[in-house]
Length: 38
Image (cartoon, rainbow, N blue to C red; front, side):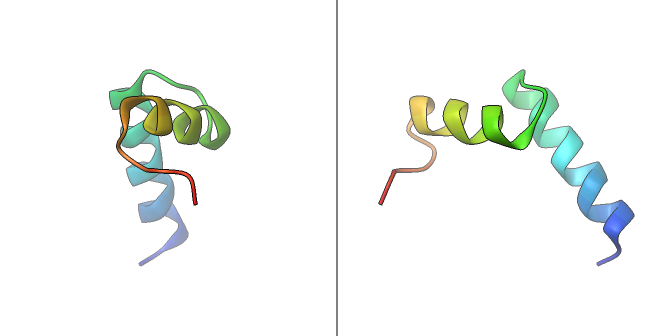
């Protein structure tokens, strides 16, 4: 995978979650139960 591919996928995930960055994405995913804190 190229860096560009990773950035595109990350941007698509942010868009679907309605967030602007990785920190917000993690918080939103936790709130939605997509990921669970360890």
